[in-house]
Length: 199
Image (cartoon, rainbow, N blue to C red; front, side, top):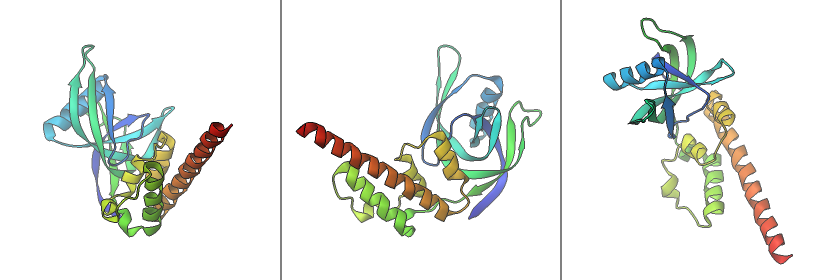
């Protein structure tokens, strides 16, 4: 469901940050420094859109600045946290007189998996498998689709695929498939350890 449409400063990067994820970014170019300074001055968020081999994705994630560390070499280390995913409607590489770009975006709402029964059940079973203990239902009541994704150690391409999916059903099916794959891998590893132990 689309929540809003507006313009957001864009930081093209070769990483994907998904909602709920915290990531440290190295900032050293003048345009990126200006973007960070403007966001701090206005207490504003910005968007990270995945760029690979000079091609910018049509999807990204709005992030907020959590902390800034000034490094000895003059660079900045900026810790950001993903807020919500978006679709880029129109991108301007340089938004003059600024040095950085911006995009007109559609920002999408998140959804708790308590209303997505299949994903809730798969995730609960997976957590039990890796932690060897039962997880109370109430502990997962407010768990979102992206909180599940953050636990699955997805690659940049997999994260991009997830945020690019149009419907919550597609995102749910994508994560269920990943959970099944990880569960199967864990089971095989356990069997291999057991066989090695007895041999």
